[in-house]
Image 1: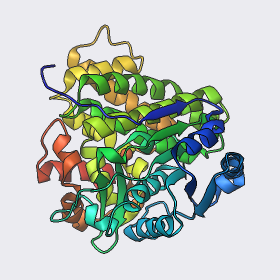
Image 2: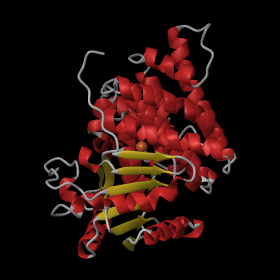
Image 3: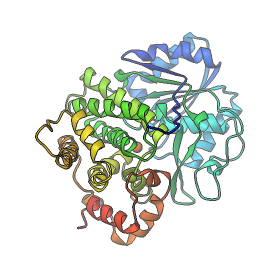
Image 4: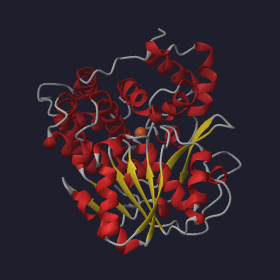
Length: 390
Ligand SMILES: [Fe+2]
């Protein structure tokens, strides 16, 4: 590899069952008044919020709770949270939840320190202001194993006025601390475990195959793909299996490092508009698209797909290179089927007449990083396959 590369990661990663117990000491190190960002009610019910609050109080920290973050946080969700943090004099943000909650916390940590609306900073043509001031310190505590937001430099925010789902992105947005405690995922329902795992898998594979791939993230991606191959089905079928949950938590964390440093591909590019127009869960559309995108990319990344097949434990000794690469695609299909992810989204009634809008919404960084260039006709072909309209 003869190119100059860069790699960014959180200031500190704390990983392991029981790791939540360290949040008080970490918070004390970074601030004195915390904005705690939460989703709807899962963390209240599970007792995780009580533990978090107990640990903050035990370290003499003040806090404000900002909860009920929706599954697709909007510009308004972030702007309201940022003004809450500013008015409350918060100097630290902690997000406890899934990808949407972490993305919201991350965006609030930036907007509490910068002027204007988060919409001004989204990656939208003609917008995309740069952050002038360093975000507030941010601790991300994931309760799902999927988006990897705990280690990424972006946050995906829905702009309802423009019907767009776009990121804010800056390496200063990477959480100061990624605190990953796999015990927090033990109560995740099977369907959410499957969808989040599908997202992590797609992130690892797309960043590994992408144009910006590099040696550091390649190593992480292949390891994470192996963990997912070993443990996703188990985590879905035996939710209380801590070893499987730990593997998936590690895979998600690694997938975040991969996507943040090496980008994504066509599956993620198409998933964003599908989320905006049809409210399809991000991980679900990514996972359904993944095998089709791998097949599309096969001619230009054959050798890398062979490595994926090997990471997934496939015996390829008697196969040609193309057959071995195809084996990776087949194995991914097998894993997804085993966790209940269907081969297309026919149930979502995606309409052909919406294809131009979907393609328009797919344009951007992720699509440009796909290893094989895509024309509009290629994207239409992928949409036909994944929508089941063929
Ligand atoms: Fe994703």
